[in-house]
Image 1: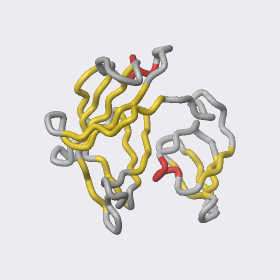
Image 2: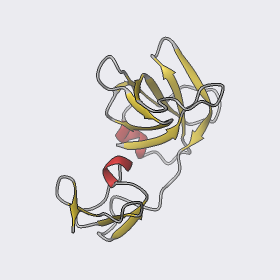
Image 3: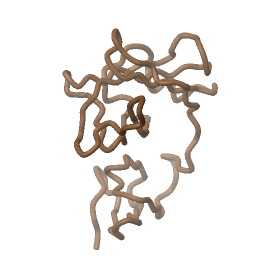
Image 4: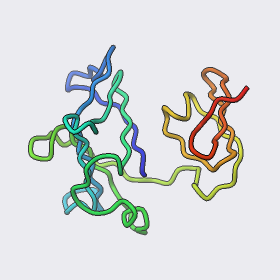
Length: 158
């Protein structure tokens, strides 16, 4: 899965989901070009189907592979050697508002093939969607809670 995080606000700068959590419809598409073209991959996250994107205080997290795929395949997408760009739209595939500009997909300083180690972050690894090899320790710098990646999930450790 590919994880996307971001911040959503209305045209007046008011954060969506301020003081509450909203489930919204969203379409995420991946293109080879920064403008125009046909998406290599698209996925629809529908609140009505139970796969909406949660937005709280403007912050959202969406994982490709958890919605309804409209075009393409995630595995093929991640194996491409091309520069790729993500485009986000709020609404359903037929009635949506496209958010521009497209965002380039870039590498992060972590790979699933990395060996177990220790990483730090501001927030729980579950909320942030952190993926890591079994045995990896994670320290939440906000709460100083320690986590350990077990076989199936992150668990708190003393």
